[in-house]
Every structure is written in structure tokens, then in C-alpha cells.
Image (cartoon, rainbow, N blue to C red; front, top):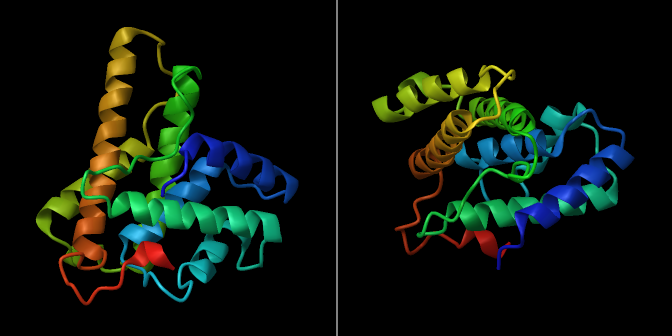
Length: 190
């Protein structure tokens, strides 16, 4: 069963701060989801070392932080493979200022693209749809942080967030495990 992403993000934020890592929780989630959507093997903890390379120069993490990220990994795989499209990037809640949410979305997308590129170095050989989406995500990663907190900007942010969510799901569909194959082991059961 998937856990509340906001509960996890608060705990992850605190654990990252305690470990004195320069990464924000949204960056860790973005990189992790990028690895998953890039098609990293979903068993034998194959995701651990590439994530460590991205967030901690390949060094091991404190036990509590490693456990939280492991739970986040399981939650992310479960949500990405949900036939009802239950995945969403873990970002600050709507009560936060729009500028903070836009900055977090930009950081999430940057980290997602980095994770994706590490696992899929030949993205130029992806389907045309995925190549276009990756280019659009690269543009989102560079979105302006100075936003006016009005209804129009809020609507634009919501559209960018939904696009990002669906882009991750499309990448997972293209590069992830074949969920229609009955021989495919349920990746969320590890």
C-alpha cells in the first residue's frame, strides 16, 4: 500500500538535513523516479548505487535516510505501475507560495532528467513522443522562478505539474518493465 507522499517528504527533508546532504527532498525524489522511469532493474536494489552517485558522490547514506529512500522507492514503483495513474511528483503543498512550488518543480524535473539520462544514455533512440516530452521537460526545468502569485500563474503551474506527471508515466511505459508480461515479477513486492 502506498503511503502519503507528504508524510514522506517531511521525514525525508529532515533526514537529508540531519545527514548534511546538499540535496532537497524534491531532488532526491526526482532522481529516484528518473532512474525508475529510465528502466533500471527493479530487483536486487539496482537503484541504490546510481542514486548514491547522484546525491552523495557514491557514498553510503545514514541508515535512517537509506530506509526512508528505500520506502520512497517502493512507493514510487507502486504509484508508477498503478493502472489508475496514481503517480505524482512529490512537491510542496498548495499552501506554499507559488514561487516555492515552481522552483521545486524545476528542481524535480532537473533531477528526473538526470536520473533518466543515466539509465537511458541513448534517449535520442527513444520514440518520437518521448523525445518531444524530454525536450519539453528540459524547458520546464528552466522555468522562471519569479512568478506572479495570481490565478493565471497558478493555472499554468497546475498544467506544468500535470504535464510532468504524465511525462514520467510515459517514460515509465516506454522504458520500464513490461507490466503486461505475466512472467514479470511484481516490482513493488521486493
